Image 1: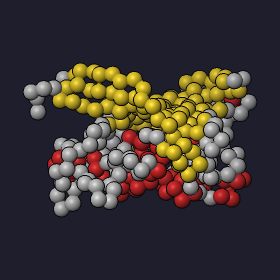
Image 2: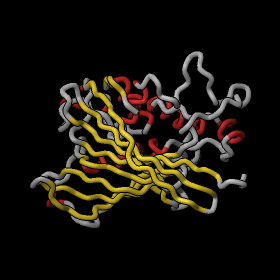
Image 3: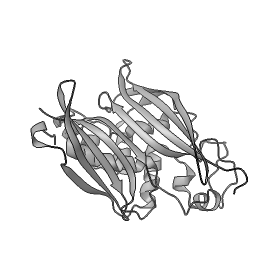
Image 4: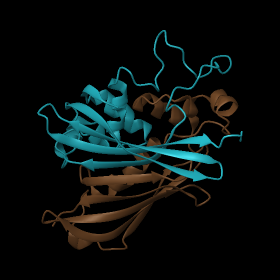
Length: 158
Length: 140
């Protein structure tokens, strides 16, 4: 996913660190972080994935006035959009420098390889995507490579 | 904390429980923080009745985030150069996950010492849910 503006905010880093169960003060306590080797608040290693919050078109988030395929009183019956049923197969990060609270990053995504495997239960379609996160000066901060897998049942099977 | 090259060697290892009976609430918490609200992770009727899974399951990135903690607790904050994983099995509510990080070798990168670390997170049955590697900068 590409995002023009991904401001790294203290409250977002705090809630992300809480969600992964990491109470390291370098992610939430400015004084402790300033005294640490990091020199200030930084984000956990997997935080850049949360740039999804800043993608106006991110498909895996309900939006006002747009049908959602999750359930209310019962499952809505809305079709699952392309990619909604895909699973995460691999994720790789290269860190050029720490992500710091106060950074305003951009994310530029490009498709990588696509490949297929056929197994007993059907065809597996793998798709690679490479995302470069850069700071306001245009310097690389994190390079992320993800591989998703979509299962396509064999024709004639359930 | 930080690690000195002279203080670590290939085979050094540490293990940590990163999820003790994972709750649906934590999965929802992660959906909110990450922005990934895929109903497969947050919506039991959808995951079960429409998608055909036994129920909701954790985001792979939640498990990767919990796994990363073992690396940063060991190697120090802002010490990782790379971190990559494969997601090898799904993580379900109630799972207890243990991450083990093992130094494969101490090497050099741009003239500075670096640890190459194998990492695996397994569930309560011993099944790996994540396998991967990381590299971390060491003090000389």
